[in-house]
Image (cartoon, rainbow, N blue to C red):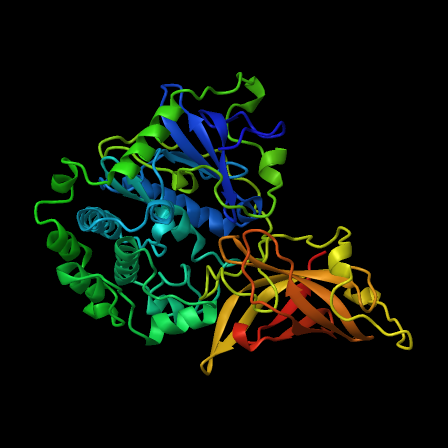
Length: 527
């Protein structure tokens, strides 16, 4: 957890803030405490989502539905203000690691722990599906490990994103490669069976320490999920059989969550938790996290900070590039916990209707909604002004003109920030794969003149490329694209050719990078 910056709010709604847990494409997450002493996680959505009335309507419905989910293994929504200038939601906080963190630090879980994990998550899906909701992003980072069982998180917010006109398009889905179901990838109708597929992938990961559909590039990974059988390693017996059933390509062939829960724990998941279910090192880690919360104190009260945070607040109005959660417990990114009988404070009554806002969102949720492992010749969307500083090391990279070659400059018509969704080709199929933001500044041949940022639908930066100018005409730029090496990103290695061509008021982007599916995009000027 990081301390609050001077410009950040000291409270949101009725919750005094203790620190900042993390940030991402949906917004920021703060650790807070209620007047009664309950520790909560408060997620504040990104301002550009707040400008979309259709998103707000979806957010409002999904928050209300999430509050009704009383399953023991889900995260309770305690409070929210969908009508605030910048909407927020507060959920119970659990001082326990995400499954992804636990596996990375301690290795695969023992078989008994995997059974408890699967039974608990299956019971959680029974509760979620019973409200006609579909989680659609069941993955290791959305599963928290506590002493009294697992917790499934973030289903309300993930669901709110889909169906928003400015965020989605026909045939588009939300999810994470390797854990998305085949029907999500193909843009077909998604039912609760998609969550079952994702649950099977999560259980395979928990038991073996490796994803069942490994891949070095997003395109290859997506192809494997649709066309190839999972790799289940040393998983054996009835647990292997159950995981394989969950990972069936045909949604109708997968077991229902209630069947999964019964096969893993006929007496219910709670019956397996009482005697202890986590291995010793994880028990110690969870216990330390819980104790550390006792020493946290909120900042002095500021009467100006009460109530929902105003849109003019610098902390809410200016989100930087998304970063990974900064606390050891990955619970930060998707807060947790509360016994099913705890409902928390009711939703506040909405204020009078506001004037309709103009939609300014430009993110397109795509079939490959969380592509985080491929350059595709560039990057995703939220680092809106990348590459504007001086970078002598990168400026000298790439093509250097000879003494006899005429140095040319970037035409003024290209200078600015251009954004738009892109597509890739793989195995004869065309996939919508995310959104590019291309920032172009003044430059000359042989020097860096631009940056391409690639973000997934949830705002996670997966790759950032620098562009070095190689050739110029009044209507076209030819450049060498190469990873900037920014920490936390993973791009295809080496140099690839990028072409930017003016097409009226737009720019056509093409990249010759077969490993990334030869991405192309139609970009519109944003700045």
